[in-house]
Image 1 (cartoon, rainbow, N blue to C red):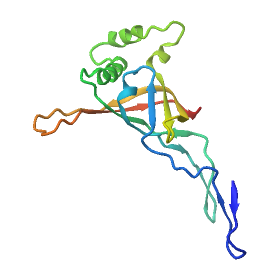
Image 2: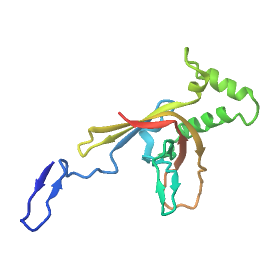
Image 3: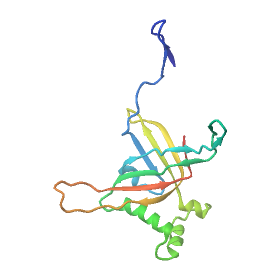
Image 4: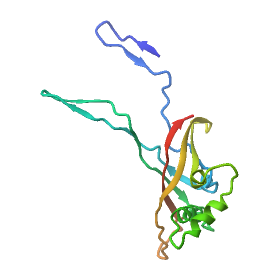
Length: 183
């Protein structure tokens, strides 16, 4: 970082080493259990992170104390739904397999279908995900890994025959995860 000196009466302002802003449209999201989402992903958020801050009351004021429990917001994605609905159905089937709305055997069938020897039943229910941020030249500049993702919701889609133009359907899904880290 270099410091710029303007004159003897002004305050110097340090210049950052990189002056290029980050573009919001260069990314690639990969969810291990959902390979068909990667190509069609249109939008993804880097979720917020909150550190709980307990407070200590004193006679004069309330003093914030650094917390020790992190809270991660949801990972939310929007994706184009492919013409055979495979990517939408993959998330649907994952949620149904975990929630078994008709009978208990749905969960067993889902877990057995994810037969990977040597991993726990809980690990078969979740999937890691990686968000790769691309720079101005479409080269990876940063990767963020989400551990143990599970789908929380899959939004409805609306079919309509009154559109004049073809507007392709977009699906939205939310995921919970244990944590994320920059790798």
